[in-house]
Image (cartoon, rainbow, N blue to C red; front, top):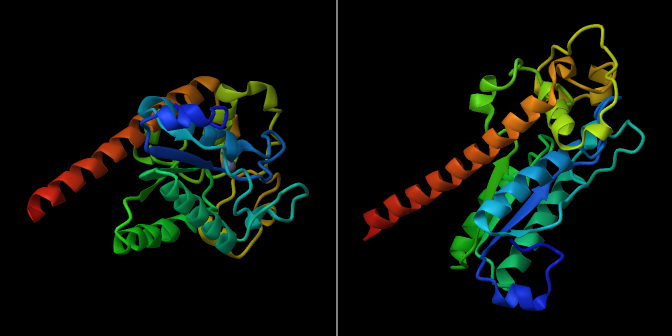
Length: 247
Ligand SMILES: [Zn+2]
């Protein structure tokens, strides 16, 4: 695995052509979790994948699209269009310096712009015959199997059972007591298109932190690694199938 701590010789000698970029957020997560929660979770998944794939682990983008949390002091965000341009520049510079694959590990639902960005980028690379692909993996990659670990699989969106479990597992010293809310937030998730999260919730979290545990966090991370690797293998199998059809 390569990281920002490696030197020029290390990079020259390495055969690695995959780079992995965690994309997080810097935004309020209720009274109990740190602002960097999404960056911490995406960073852990990215590191686990970089170790397994012997890839180049890039330092995280820890300020991204958190406009829906902007009312809270300390939340800092990039506009979605800015984030798209940042990703485009990173992908292009990796291509220029000899990489062929970029995995974006997204830890924050508000970074929705990543999806149309990579869909376009991959076509742009193909049209220019550039050997580069950009793959997007969200930390909800194991959503379909979340019920194997978590009690709540619906409306556990932000600072709830899942995210609190991850932080209890990864850095418990940063978890404080949660502030009980009088009722769960029961509106569609896309209401963040219209309202700030702190208008929709009492303490800025949306979900069930009371059900969290470090054990659940550890199991969930293992599941996310497994599902991410499965997703990558599925893409490779599909490429192989299409290659055979064309020959
Ligand atoms: Zn989060």
